[in-house]
Image (cartoon, rainbow, N blue to C red):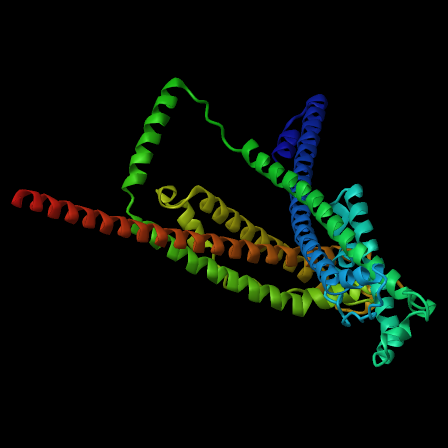
Length: 454
């Protein structure tokens, strides 16, 4: 408006034309600045989403490594080693069936859900290929195990009352052709379990390395935009003096302040852990699992809005006030303060994700009067229309963020419990040392008295 008023007040055409050009440049710069801000916000959200997905995959592959390794050890110990030891020695061991459902606890649904929801778009191609190869081999192992169980059920279980010689050739220690599949399948399953456990560990390390890169990049960004202080000789001397004063003050801090702070933090973190555990369970049961499961299976579930009051009742102000309090670094360890600061940041992130998600649901889903499948899906298509593909992505991201806050709260609780135990041990040691000193002084006094009497 200012440019327009000035332009109208100018009488000459050249001057007016110059002001019009200046106005156009001003408008362009404003729009370009808004575009840059929006792009920076999108990059931050992509980085946050990538970090959450990587952390979820690291946890998932850690479980795969443990479960597959445990299954391999159990299979070898109970079935593989006894059978092949006897079979290789020329004996006739009984082809014992493996309990039904031994591999039923391995869940492969998370990767399919990521593929359907577009959650892997932020990952590199090489990493996606490596994870995909693992799940392909895992699915092959599950199929092999299912065939093994089916053959065992059909061909061995009905003959359990037979003598062991029934399964072997009349002459020699070899199984009959009808049952040679047992040896091959048992060996293949055992080797595949061990190989997949090692591959899960290797994939976890790759994902963890990428996760550390993202985390370091976020830390570098924080340091990059933090205000810098140019050190001088005077400031160095002052910092040395201040550090000495801080050390003296830390030595003078009473131990009861530390124990009171630890007790207060335990109550706060326990409340947060309970809140996120209940919220995550209700969120998964009511929203995430029904939609993502149906969507990953090729169905056409209709998107529904998440509750506006999903995070109602959470309050991080007590923790934030504690972290910003004067002298808190003299009472609590730096590592604990860093963990608490990360927890506050993660809770703020999940609040922002939920707020943006609920607002978009209200504006794009609830505002639509017609909730037919044709609104969200093209005819005979199992993928959401392009303008609704944000829904499964954000639905999954919010669930990961809630779980991340729950894990962080439980991790800090474990750290606080450890500090409580250490404090109790220190107090016990101090009291014991004090009692030993008293006894020593008493013995010394008694010996001195006996010398005086003599």
